Amino acid sequence: MKPKTFSKGIPLQSDPITFWAILDFLRDPGLLFSIGVIFLVLMVSWFLKLGLEKELIFSTVRGFFQLVLVGFVLLWIFSLKNNLVTIFVLLGMILLAGGIARKRGQGIPHAFWIVAGSLMVSTSLTLGVLILGRSIEPTMIYLIPLGGMIIGNSMNGAGLTLNRLKAEMELRKDEVLVFLSLGASAHQAVQNILREVIKASLIPPVDTMKALGVIFIPGMMAGLIIAGKSPLFAVRYQIIVMFMLLASAAITNLLVVLLGYRQFFSSYAQLKNL
Image (cartoon, rainbow, N blue to C red):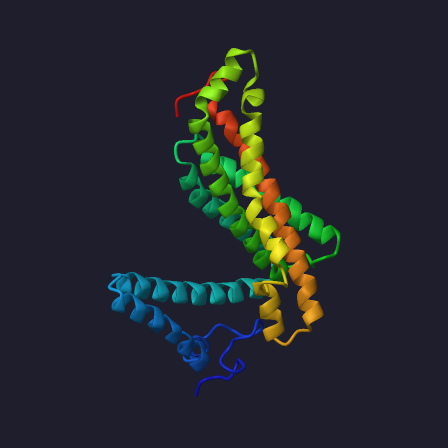
């Protein structure tokens, strides 16, 4: 007879991870029927002959099981109640994010370490300020999800920033060479480019802040309300998250630009051919 260690098919943090817990989770009717909306997309693809059916099915199945796996892994991690595990999990996320974002800056030397180092600094600073200000508790239940949000959001910004920096340096190479020929330092020669790249990298998060609560209800706020929390409680955490994401994105992008532009110059301030 299977043990009843969970509620309504969803394991709780204190529940052991058992075969029956996993089976009941996967048999949740609400979860399974939500997949039905994907069939609408498949029908559109089939009707318009887009040829995306296989990719959609593969992506849906992969995403579904990846999230389920992450859920049960987090359930196991939270049961350990060890802050050292939190550090290793966040470090692993940062290294993976650095590898992904590096592809955007392909051709830029040390792109991986630039991104990984920037993410480590921005994540540490942002979470540190939130902990010191008592906005969040220094426990893995807060640090891992919020750290993951910071790293994921900043990773996207870092990748796009590297890509934009490389494109601008290639496009305005002659301008940089003119400044260098007039005796300008490497930083002086590219300061206009750096300013524009940083400004462009902050447009998406700033525009998102403008639309908060007016055009859309953000994910964390909606999730907490659906979970039965007070709207004001949900608003509190959403404000913390949005400010956190904006600050971490700004710090990451700034560090990526300041460390990244140096890779285009030699130690003698000569422009390299990357």
